[in-house]
Amino acid sequence: MAHWLDYSANRLHGTTIKNAGYTGVIRYIDSPTRLATKHTDQNEYRSHLAAGLAVLLVMQTTTTASDGGFSVGRAHARRALAGADHLGYQGPIFFTNDRTTLPNPSAWKSYLDGAASVLGIGRVGAYGFRNAMDVAVGHATYFWQAGRRSDVAPHTHIWQDNNTQVKVGGITCDRNLVLKGIGSVGGFLMSLSDEEQRDLFDRIFGMLRQRYFAKDDEGAVVEVGGDHPGATPATVLDSLDGNFLVNMIEVLDKRVTALEVAGVDVDRLATLLAPAVAKAVNDEFARRQNS
Image (cartoon, rainbow, N blue to C red; front, side, top):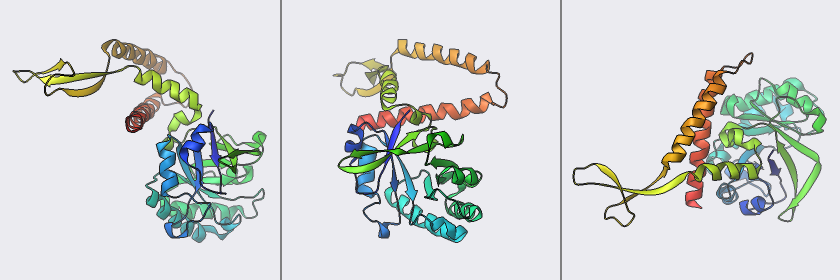
């Protein structure tokens, strides 16, 4: 499983984090006019993306701000959205109850509802200890839990290991374990280690071949050498590799069809999985071309 960092003492370049063995970060955000040292900015955010890191954002002013309920949640979400738009970020944003106690469960739910009134519940994440995670169900979509590993809720996506802090780039950081994927920032790939992700992509891109095409005298597209006048380069699957993939898809289709698990809609599963894989491969291919 992948480990991510969160931190507030300073900003870290994406390469520094990547070289330390981490595959993602969770960074503080606020409106562009309120950014302080603990918040990410455009330069840091872009360096994270350039390094291939997954990024999530969190909005927090004080540890007790969520007691303000709906109106405060709405105000915080507006500020967070302004900051996210400034970065070009479109993923989930976490809102916090950063303490072991939950004095007012109703206020916590209302606070998250206020955030959802701005972002939509699909972009709202909740951070806190197990008590806050349980109450947040139905008021947030993503869950980032602090505290003991033994207390982690079944619906939690990310666990913050409060027993382990690490030094990266000269600052103290919290270490987080990704338990479940969050689709807009990597989906199921987030649950793979950095090495496993590289191996997966290397296998896929190892099947690609650089070829060249041009139109013949009759206007038909034919394969030519790279030195042919008017040759257009294209990255394509080798025919043998393509046949291999087709065969593997057929095998996978049969296995999925054979699934008999109560409550699992295999058609829905296939519909969700296919574009997730395609997007992940496309994004990684584009990143490698630009790196």
